[in-house]
Length: 195
Image (cartoon, rainbow, N blue to C red; front, side):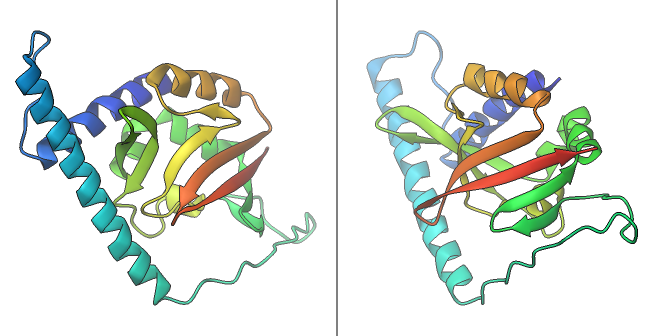
């Protein structure tokens, strides 16, 4: 199921990227000129993404940073978790049901975000998030517009096969680590999955 989500993510991201430049993907028997046009379209996408990231950085720089509040659960008073709780700097406690629900409905998760592959030197280096709206599941997990996902539990997210490998390794895990690039700085989001 998540494999289908990752394949759909890659197909959708490519279609969005190509559509953004007004170019169609070249056919399998494309000429060198058609491939050059596609590469030019990709360069235009990169330029647009860079400009958008700069605008987002300026907007976020003018907004005060939220202060992390460390939550200390008290099982005698606190109700069961229904969503992620920030317990430290980039560290969350997440009910396993919250995580499983996201995996059970990948189409809903994909409607919460626009994902674009990031390339450098002709290679995919990660996936960039755009279009995140307030209080969506991914925002509640600490993701922000412009975040570039690089790896999940140490497995790079540069190909659909690697993404599937990362998913398989993470599915039964008790904790997850997501490495990403945010405003030019690498950070790691950590999640403890609890029952």
